Image (cartoon, rainbow, N blue to C red; front, side, top):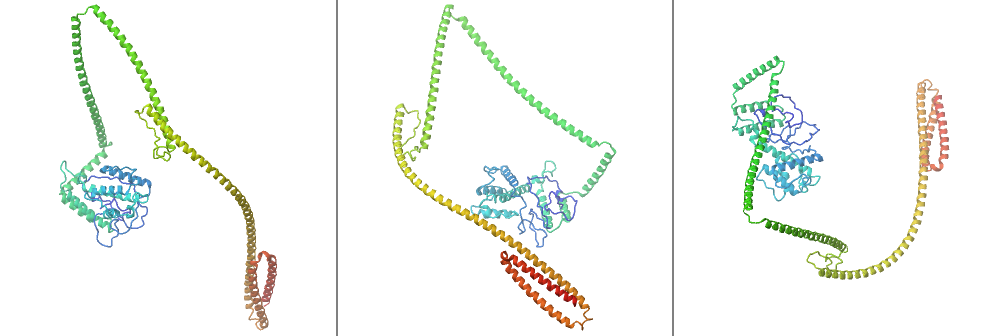
Length: 633
């Protein structure tokens, strides 16, 4: 089974290169593409373990080289960028499109999916899972355990905690839950694709007949996939035996004639050779020319078809216009006939009338008089209507002004807490003025008088309260003046204390600076003393090395002058022992002195330095005498 780069489940390279055609495509099938998200591949490929997200069948054995993400117990890390806002928005749009496409019974938008509630999530999950199992019903209790269990049973490769079900829409849990829902959507799409045989075998048909053995082919394909997948999980990369077995079963299923296939292949090979020979002989590629002409003819045919459809539509429009014009012409003819009949009737009346010209002139004069009366009455009516319109405008303006004043009154009354009746300052009285067209002048006067009496009483109460509050204010002001005087006294005291604190701070800062200066001085002196001590140690070491070298030279002559120098040697040894003892005692004294000097360095630095010089001079004299004695040996 060949796994190309586009369909290979593992991200590791093949151990064995293969250029064979995949047996999965041995029979013609239509390709169904799903909407895939732009999930970046994991960058770390540090182990030989391959992870599969496809569950084909359970494998037996304990020594498997690969662990399935569904069957293994290893906790995997989700490689999807679920904390990337752009990726989360892409997942939300995909979920919204899927719910709209499948007819989700409810209003769902991208905005509502930004932070859904637990109830909305359970509805969405139940709707999506019902596409896999129509008999499924969400339990009423312990849904925080049921949803992760269902995802785990389906083979979701990542862990979804129960605590995330309590707050689904939280920013730290919603991306994880959304990733599980998107995985469930992809599972539903794969399930729908696998269950739809028309999609799988749409191209494998001879005309109008459908495949009758689609179930058998599906069974063979699934068995082949399960077997090769088990081998793949055990570490295999090539499946020659399974491919041959699967091809043999397909040939038996579709009654393939081997001889016919061989003859067709031979015929194809001959025809291919003939085509290549003709292409080589011809300078121009006639096949490409014919294909170009075919494309041009198809383009012309499409243009002619579009032109024909335009002509047909234009013809239909003209026919509609002609039918409309015919109907209008028929109506006009009927109208002409009616006018002719009316003309003949009027002509008959004119020929048979019994009025004289004087009567006609009198009738015309009366008609003119009546027309003048009508005109004068019309003018009077227009003037009356104009007057009525002006009055209505004035009434509307007055009403609008009254409503504005009433609104201001109500606004002021609400600000003063006079309305409604239950307001703080209303005292159970109704200060609200209601607008009604049924109120007359007497009612308005009565309402005004009542409200004015209540307001006067309220003003009196307010004045009394103001006088009481004024007295209280005066007493409080006196208390405040007394407190302010106390505060000013305390402020002066506080100012004096702050001045003292400032002086003390300055003194403290000066003392700290002096102490720091003294410490710097002491450390500099200590560094100089330490440097001097190291120099002395270095000089002593150098003198000792020189003494050792001289001692070696003296030892070479030791055997020659042994008898002559016995007495002198004893003397030198005694002197050397006394010198070393003196030097050791002196070093201990110097160390003790340096410790004491470190404690009193600010007082006795000059004296200690002179004593050090004296001691160093003594040491030099001792070392010179010692070197002289050694040289004399």
